[in-house]
Image 1: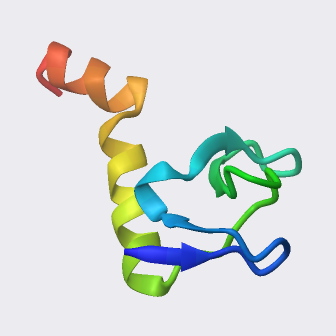
Image 2: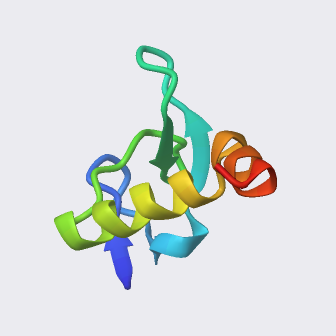
Amino acid sequence: MIIKCDICGYEFDYKDALIEDCISCGEPRPKCPECKIDIDLPEELEIEFNKKQKEDSIFTKMEEELGL
């Protein structure tokens, strides 16, 4: 899905967004690849993004390895 940055107007596939930790909360957040500002994903993409981040978490991987 193509999204447009509200700040700079750059259009890109949401999968190409930069993923960096938020300065205030420390959670991974998608950022515009052009201006590096946090972007708000549509609700359905936000759910998918959060699910993927949880699956890729080191804690989830440790739980799987330990059989918890």
